[in-house]
Image 1 (spheres, rainbow, N blue to C red):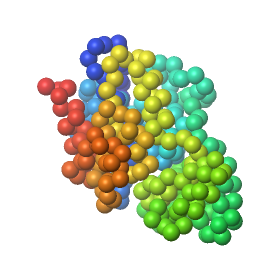
Image 2: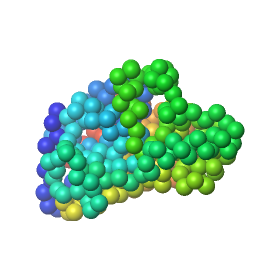
Image 3: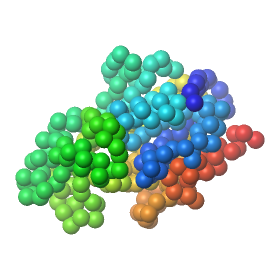
Image 4: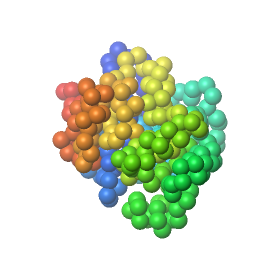
Length: 283
């Protein structure tokens, strides 16, 4: 399913969708996106760009983008960068690095610095905090449910270190404070917390919203996510959607009172939410 969206200046709203992956567009256990097929097909028919924004690496997301048929920009590693595939619908923002098949706009802290920070935090607190950089492929596979080949893509990290710490851990506050003193932060996710720089999905989404608004007059934005690392992304869009999960959304709803909660979890919930929002465009 190839995305051939070519926006033009117009008065009618042009919609752009930003979406998390694990637990949102992807099933948290099987990693399938197929139940979201009808909504993705509608997006293709209406020319609505779907922007993937995830903690996954560029390498992981390239595989998924090919499977779904997307040629839009995408945001890997919790806003660590934005990639603009070639050929694009417009020049990338200033500061983007021209690579062979894409432009790369870096926003995050380099991975080697995160690994060094994690080592320092571990030694300072006397805690055995382990990240992907300390794990074998077998262990990552066991923790994520991914196969070995997928795990090899998951460790090709540039801006984000998944760490085996839960936000309800009695040590979470101390770890977060130690990270803050080093100019990095710990962000709760789905299976893991994430050690990253001052970047977040919201920053990357704001850049892309401005980029699209330079191409289209009237942009309306949708974002879908299921965990606290989606909070900043959900804050900056017109239609924030929380995809139902086993987690409570009480705190996130307080911060985003306009957010709707999907009726179903995972890609089923994604499908229904997107169809509901876009249904007016087909009438």
